[in-house]
Length: 324
Image 1 (cartoon, one colour):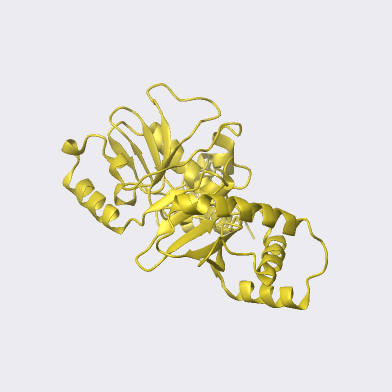
Image 2 (cartoon, one colour):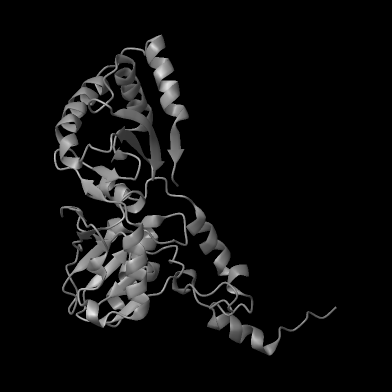
């Protein structure tokens, strides 16, 4: 029986195919750029989708200020940080700024003067927040001045923030009372941006970063105030230490304060204290520094937990909330 001859166009299509490393990311329902004739989601998009759905437990690990990255992503309404790129600023880009939120939840923005802003608290397309943010940064650097960045699926093999940012540069958040940093020239703001600014300011919770300890943020709510403190210590070790302090009655930050539980966020633990409404950020600076000393001593203890400490640990574990 004679062999079936290939269709004359088959070899042409095969020659036109790209190697995997050259295949760009396109819409799921668009034809795959490899010219297979199938939709992207049924062809090379399968591997890309699998790669971007794997959850990175600590996306900011290795970055300067990891705890503050977590705080700005999950806890702080309005803040900015000047970022330093490994390779320096491209021509025409006077600065790169990380912002907690941008107008209309834009992933990024290139201002008229060329300055770049990246939004931290926006939806991302994969399980690797660092890769998604790095893609937003690269898009913003290449965007024409005066335009926002449009969200897209980040390439599965794209760089991460750890690849783009200078690891030796400081990470120093500036907490704002509102979002006026969106519009340096408010008279020229569009109606949409002005409306977004008004809504964001109305929803912002007053927040202050403590100066005496790292990554601790006081915030004010109608009923009571809180201190939320992002800590780098591994969760199991931190729970043991907090349990020792709780059992000893030394886990508070002064009269009327109480350690009420903790958040889990991006691989780190965030203990939370309730504070009386009259306690302001400046009032908790000294108690927080004293608590840090007690915590360090508790972390240095390796004796087994006592029955009272185990009960305290169980209570703390039951009052944990996972944010992501």
